[in-house]
Image (cartoon, rainbow, N blue to C red; front, side, top):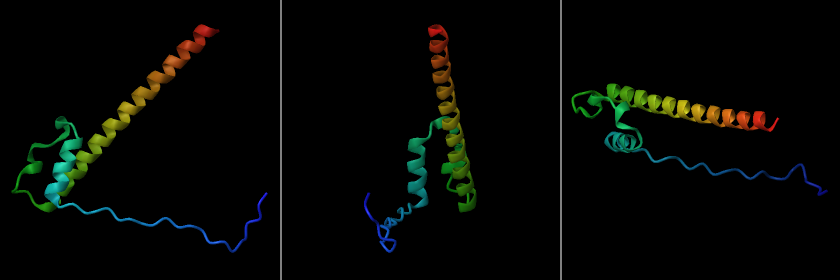
Length: 91
């Protein structure tokens, strides 16, 4: 067992900030990730204000994340059911 000094310095991770995208770039990047059925029609409307656009984008991100979570849960449950069937067959 090695002796470690109490005064040894901890290595700190360097914080690298994310690059901020312009609103148009952020919308374009988000629209590439998200299926079209979650995208509201008015998100690209130039007449809406920034507050409304941010609200729509947050809603879009939330819908996409919720659907991804539901899909992951379904997959996990199906895997557990499969394992259960195999264990029941083995007994």
